[in-house]
Image (tube, rainbow, N blue to C red; front, side, top):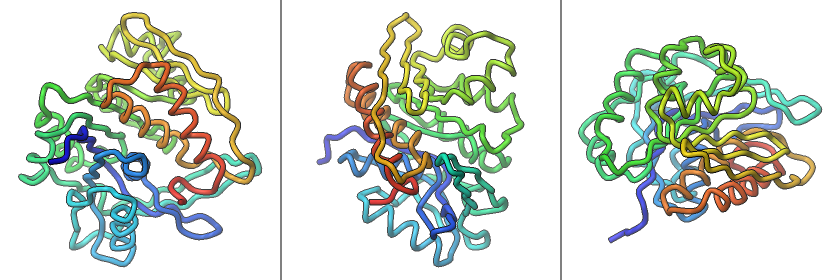
Length: 284
């Protein structure tokens, strides 16, 4: 019997359409991919179309060691895709194609049985944009055991406009990973000076992981514990696509296994820097 903690990632799987070709993507899928590469008991709950893109995505995830039994097959909608343009500094600009299979993930009996075993549940916010996706996500949260650590990695770079839902999502998590741009967006919306402090004091989030790109990260807890790390230099020739997902995966792994904040900060930064050293989020 597998004694490793069960880590469930919930949300979109899609293909990033780069000028050089396709790369597997979708933040929750990336998280599951990186977890599996680290030897974790990683599960993905998502949805793909009955098409070649869907079959390729499931095969790639399974080859990496991800449990794909929770990846559903949609009979009507196509597998997700995102257009990606990279500037000279390695920064990405995304064009998200709507009306795809991952927007109507279901939470059925199979998913409920899996969720009841979860030690960590990680989610983003894109898959809640539709009424179907939101309802399924809420059912998933309600199905989790009391022991489960809930991790939210929001996605604000695509112009997510439903701030009531965003604040609800952040407040449902015990741990939140945000980057600097997302932190500034939270501060503007709630009119506060410090996003992490607001998440701790107003939303009840226990752990906030603020990522600062090449300058590393700062982890804080509601009780005042802090762990800061300056980061690692990435190899040249890559981009920033998926760096945050590698960080989130390591955060989930560390929380599942009871690592110290200092160990999480160092190991997560190293994982992000490795991804930053090559194109795409999951190239092996």
